Image 1: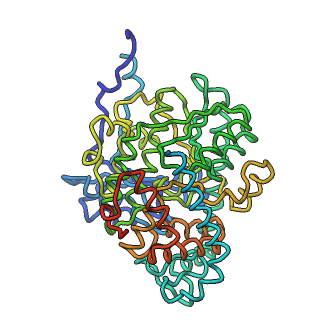
Image 2: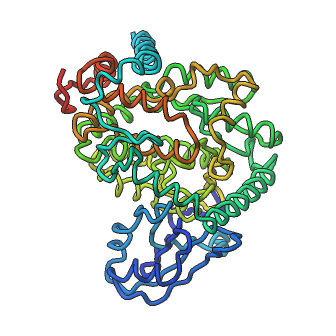
Image 3: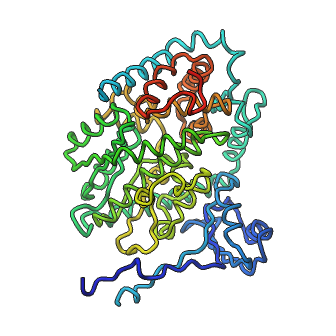
Length: 103
Length: 394
């Protein structure tokens, strides 16, 4: 139909180098996350969003990992239990922006 | 007739439940050497590989008790849950009457006590939320639950659909997974695929009907179904990708491409390429509400929504559970559902004596081919499977 967008035609981007991690154990810090990922490649940066005193959102982090196969880290770490939580790990998904929808 | 078999299975399970709670407690002392020792707090079997008992208490309960004594973490958890409650409240309030079409929320409604409690609370606290109830009837769910769903929907005067997927989908799922449980246990394999597919059928339905929220009465301790402990809403990235199906495949060790036809594989949610404005948010209110067992039973009693005798998960759950339990006891020595129930006892104060009796009798019954065997025979018959095909002895 005219004006409608076929989203199946729009490339969903999987960011190959950035990994999303959440359900973090209490007090998880940058060092914890670096240690976790270092066996799977060089950790370029960790962007941690967590307030371990007064929580205002779910704690999560983005990890830039230099590796030929980020899936190895995802497969190995997703679901591992630390403290009370099973951590959630997957490659960052970048959704199409609203600008795309105006096609 | 199929319905007669379903009634017979329900009768068998009622007998099992009655014996487990009334007769087994008097007999269990006689058989204590032929069944596993259990934690005196959470009743988990000592046969679970990562469990060790010290003074009758398991290492998981020792850790849990330590956590409770840790003021800093406990305080943070308390604040975090409060924060989640406020956010959830805002989310549900903001959706009242705001759905793009006729409904604001699709409630995945199993007829178990958790989903009935959730619905009751939603009706009271968010009366403007236009909900559609969705129940699956895949031919293997408890007749009691299906009847309960219809009764509650009628009593609350809510729109309700009973979705019957074509029978080949679930038969294929159960037959393949039951034959391939191996040492992973049925919880990680059969139940993971079954539970995940149920949710995903709801996602597709909400997407097609343009319903912005999907709500499920999944307990926060049910890691398998939720795939995480700490969020009351599924991260939107997960909903807009194949992450949930990928995770199910990774943790079960199965690939849906090995089991299903191309057409049936499309039933497993893949948000890639879908309109993000229509992709529903998946909301799990129990994560933020965290009601204990007494709160749930109190609500059900006040509202006369479910007689306590019918609220046992043994009666309201999937019939295939009987085969899963028998396979688990034979292959890994314990029922693979025990860690989840132990967690619910630890966190939600579920009744440990009830579950100790149920798990002990299931173990005893499976080892000695009594109590469970009749149900297993009937459910295998419905699936067209033999005992040998799933690694059991007739």
